[in-house]
Image (tube, rainbow, N blue to C red):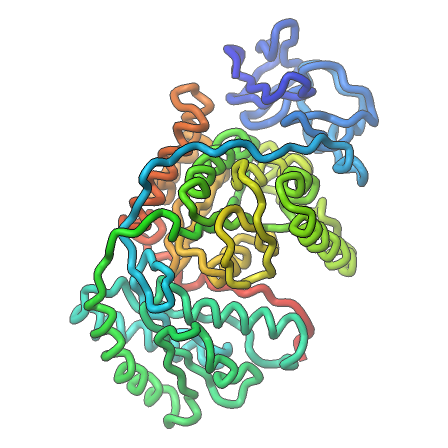
Length: 499
């Protein structure tokens, strides 16, 4: 950053980012002034850029100039575009040494399978959309009748969705749903789970006989117990001994290596890749150095930046990531879309222009450690270190996959503002700019915008995020938990025909 109010990220960059709104005549860099209004978070040309030339930011191409651009001009959707092939003209990066996080520990719940929970919920899980209303009623009644008697529980959580029937049992779509539900049933943040089916659906509860591998899971069908009201009463009778046992559990001190953190960004802006995302990356470097696991996801939002990950992976792991991106190109192409249909309108209003620019900023969430594995959506994450999970960029779907894979905590960066929360896994919100942290103080847990003002460094904010992760993992509530988010954010990825 310099005194002009423009941050320049690399010496060879063609554009800088305005940290405040610039007016014509305001200094950009020595010898260059703004020639038109530049909104905060948007790009301004540092030098003349010829039409057709790659435009550099982060020392990487973020697209091609659609027209000749003069120094001091606003560089956005009319001046910069995605041209296939631009993303391949890049210089790769390698993993770097990680910081020493010291003796990092938190207070968690050790489960029978050896994993550690950061919360002590009980799940009420629907196998099919037909049992959703009953599951919600069971959770409401359990929270009203049982929770006051068993204060050691964090709450009864309805895990409901709109799938489970109207499809075949074969194929990728049903397999994803089964994998996702099984991951929640045995999740370490659930002390126990109750699976509720209707009885005649495709997604039969017998398919989950081995869910959780020893976790405390009970199931029944509504059709077998006399109907909806009877199902609620039967569920409460089953839940009481579960609640009694769960209420006796106590937190114990465990190493940070037991943390599995899902990384999310939503409502990103031009500052996300400068402040919140690299600060989260610095926090993940500490986590990985402590033996923990970070899950980077949102495959469409690494398009054009995947080389920063494949260069830090063994050849077979790099090949797995490349294969998933190839799948996504075919997947979106089949519907007449393109991976550059991302960024969203809100991203663009915040200063992001192309998928390359968004991806380069998004990848920063994963830090600088080696990529140790690539897993399918909702697949159980077993590797320690930085892992990539193949998910859509749509936040609720992506986070659902991470939680199903075992994430016991989520950190979510945002520049435009997000109201997302996730149960049973707590979600920490980090803002990319201080204005958002002030405007949405009731939703933002930590402000990374201080990096722009120079009052904090990326590494210092990364240390704060890591400390907050340990505190939340030990039971400190997040803003989204305090408001009550999480009952409607279970959104499994839906692939395949509805029959």
